[in-house]
Image 1: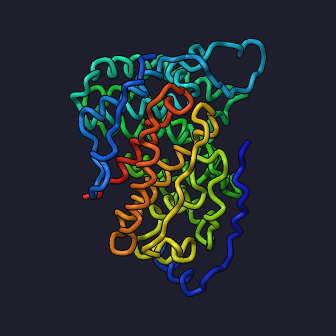
Image 2: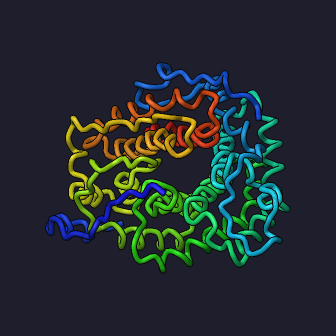
Length: 381
């Protein structure tokens, strides 16, 4: 396991800034997929057109019913647990692993909402309806409640499930309402899992892979805000501040680690941007990562040496996840951080062409990271 060996102690930092912060605190072929970089970069917001959306949809559409290869990651309680992926996870058995199947379906929902006239819209809707049936979700809930797998997909898969639920609950369509209702028992269980787990987590997990706490908090916060779950939002707010408020001088030069698809430093920034009041965040980030204020700030993009290696290809995902954090800062604080947009654009431009090819290792999940980065590039009105 490639661990990001950073031990970020809650240092005191600039007491004046800290005081001010505390005062202010809140199996189809995809070989013909072609995403044109020149046509979507270099503008204030990155926009997909319908043709590009059709191409991007081909990636998750090709894998959500692809059962093998499959990495189950389950704990066996006995021979009775030896079942096929589809038997164990009828809603999310494709795309190599459970969480990738979840965010593949998020990608399809997101594209359908933005582009109702997608070329394969009817096929996508049929597959989503089949996957997210009440019966399938009931079996998923039963799996998560089983004695040996209560911590299954903690916390990355939990967070992506809530992101999928958020997209469905904010989809103004009969199908969106139906599927959101079907998924609700599982999304409610994910909220309950977070609610039980977060108070027990004494130290945040600061790695560049699935168990990163800041990433999970950020997606969970988006969900809670979208569905107006004030109690859940309050818990996430409290825990994020307890974990990260006193952090300073994040050693971003130590990044990336060899298998990272998340930046430990930037993911922390992402959740703190959401929970801190607008006046407090610039004070906190000045202590946490002051170099971001430099107009010539840059980060070398993650380099992938072998895209057939499922771990090494993570670095394409890192480029997208870095970009979505940088876009978020630039969009919310354009007077101080607009220069970060160019850094984000560069990261996207280096990895977007690599969504294509004959390797399943990245194709089964990278489309969701790319689409989320493109979404976050948009200036919120």
